[in-house]
Image 1 (tube, rainbow, N blue to C red):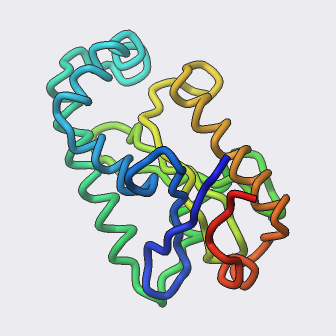
Image 2 (cartoon, rainbow, N blue to C red):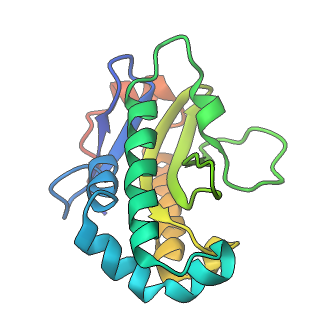
Image 3 (cartoon, rainbow, N blue to C red):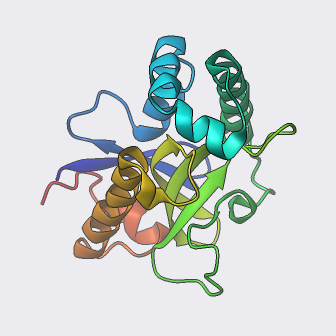
Length: 185
């Protein structure tokens, strides 16, 4: 699988994968979907049972509105993070019970809501403290990622990118910075 890594922040702490078949990196793709009313309507209409069961929301239009607002806030929070703020506060271990750091640890960032928990997720790999590579994102309406195809696909992307980085010997920011950024080897 061919992929590139694009820098999202000027300080180089946050990156996003750009897969060969895509026009944009995953960060831009995810936030574009989360702002697309037609895409959201189709998604929530297809997943209305999960929306009702886990969030007690029966109106797809409310889910669309909440998603667009959450996505705008989340995108701003990430892109406007200043150098003194920790990305480690935003990106937390994917496995809720993980108690220690691991090489290229799987991470998640959640949106923030007042009325109900946010279903927005960005998935990333931790290069080292405060340095992450975003591998994708999803609307997670169920307790685990394994319950739905679209979240399972994101888990698969995390593993594929992690395996690619390991095969290239990229385990930290310095190694990523020094690689040729074209990882189709």
